[in-house]
Image (cartoon, rainbow, N blue to C red; front, side, top):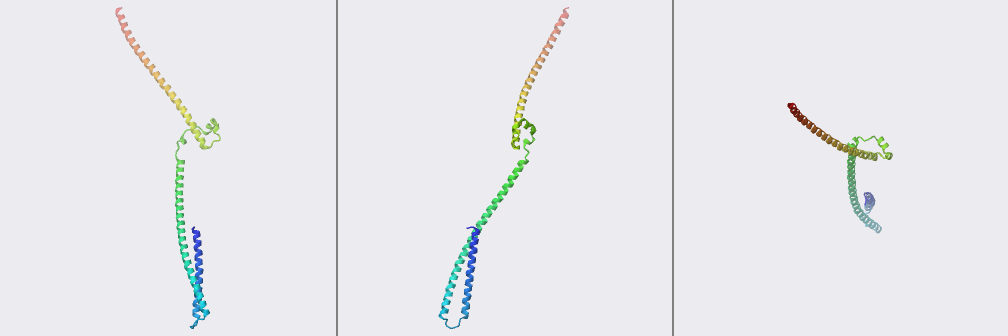
Length: 212
């Protein structure tokens, strides 16, 4: 039973109970008035019949009041139970709503943190968007998000190619350095040989001069 139905049933029971109580009160008032107006002598048969009818009617109303009182108590208990269940449901929904508000604030904070986070791609020296679109016209109708992904992928390809060229040039540079070192070593060796030859030539020349 919902709280609304319990309240309606309780209101109906209380209204009926008040109605029967009013009828009982009026009947009691009639009985008392009749007793006060009666003479001290033996009442007539008609008066006795009327008193018996009123007594039976009063007993019936009292029994009805007791029944209505029990119904009112039961309706009150049902209304309290329905109210308690409704209060628990309201508390549960309120707690759930508070949790949803907390989760919403948390998610908004995460979203703002993501928006404010200094992503590396924002500082990359990408080629201008117009230049990229002129080189890749197939992305003319692409949305900004996917366009940025395409530009980053293109930048990756370009940088990988540049890195490949850098490594190739580095290998060539190392080969040239090695070749230059070999030539320098050869020249140093030749220079040393020339010095020795000149020294030996001088000794031979001195010998010739002594003989002549």
